Image 1 (cartoon, rainbow, N blue to C red):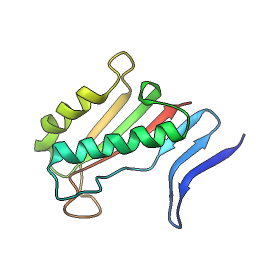
Image 2 (spheres, rainbow, N blue to C red):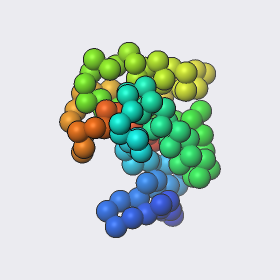
Image 3 (cartoon, rainbow, N blue to C red):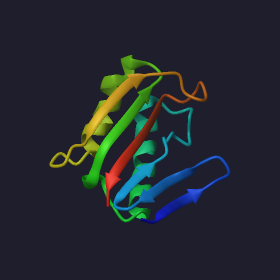
Length: 115
């Protein structure tokens, strides 16, 4: 079975495709000065692009993991997630509070999808 790496870098790839499964790296906002709603929108747009590049879409997401630096942002993040997620094909999901790599980042999301 082949492994395809999309946007590989020296430390990690942004996406890896193995067989019919697509794995994204954790995605964060490019504009870390934005609030959690805007950061979530940025992250989900990046995920849409990575999934499209891998030949799949959000309707085929199997699993999502979400990290919030402050769980009190849960409802704000969900207001964006709920508008974005394919309601006919929702993935399993975990959402936890965690420190992220940089203090201005408020949300990070990683997904796994079928091809």
